[in-house]
Image (cartoon, rainbow, N blue to C red; front, side, top):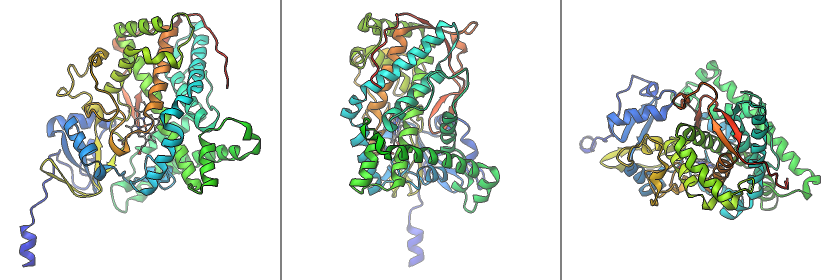
Length: 488
Ligand code: HEM
């Protein structure tokens, strides 16, 4: 009887997907820019695609309708994260928000950062920091433009994003405003290395007993080195905040976390460091890359650039700089930012999820421990959801209530559901203010001999994506420099 029961059990029905090789399955098909490769594969196998990555089953979602099922209808089953080697180490064994599996500690930590750093009132309170860091960036670009040097705009944008995050989180900035040529600071190198390591290939994540491969390939020692460098950095920051001389200074995120740790006994030291890691990594490259893509698209689309500049300059007049309070009136600039995030969502596969229980999606079975990639890059370019999907047309948002708040599943640059990005309002305010200042202050041109078609849009994918080649532009000052009173 037992045998016949087993025979009666229906065979699981997996979604269609590309055939794989023995042992490695489809691992070899991910490619360097997996969001683009997966988009191409989903055109052939459909928007719900099964893949086998070594021993790990994976599901790739590439349509708005399926994203809604995963991120809304079944959000609770899809809201955990896989326990990968790099995530485990760099997050202090998942003592953080971004990489932690779904559990009570994750809920508690997410509440702490939402309440203390990322709620709308606190974000509003970072106005001075935003305006001053934008002004420092403008001042530094101004200086170099007066020497008729091409500007390495990518470096300037990275310094802006990193300094802003470090300032609100750690109370100080760590990068110079005037990076020289392609040179990157030591601190930036460490951040880029962890970005790459978060998504690097660790054989032990896909094959049992393959830890030795990671040792031989050197990726294990790279991870250890990067962990130690970052750990020393967080350690120094925490020590500096424990110095009684600091008591007079403005409270920052580290102060708030240390207060929680000491007074309310809510946090252990690894969790303080895990949260600092989240804020530093989640906040820096995403903001920088969004600004970089926005400027690249504006250079490729001069009529959009002109229209956005006209709007910003009309609203700000001869004030000399854009302030936070000017931005809400800039409806076209806001559409430019939306259109940038549609074509270039900088976390193109969201942060991978892991399924917590058996579920049926359409008529297909999805099993626990399946890794889920929601390809928001593909969804943002899906012709079923968007007219002329590959063109940069901010006007598509005129009169439309489609936005990135996680309710329009054709447009998910910040994700949706329980794991949606908690940094949305911080990020948008920073991007809009910095972009408005760049457009207000300067006229932008491509360096000699470069045509707009020649702008290199090739991408590098770490945990977020950015342009492979730095954006180098010529800036000419359009408005005189009116320096504001710095409070910092
Ligand atoms: C343009 C800028 C940004 C974009 C496009 C972006 C996008 C994203 C995306 C797609 C996710 C994954 C959501 C999911 O799995 O559904 C995420 C997670 C996260 N982001 Fe952002 N982000 C940005 C800026 C920021 C900033 C400035 C911060 C903080 C200062 C931040 C903090 C986080 C954190 C902590 C998570 C993990 C949430 C969790 O797992 O519960 N992000 N972000």
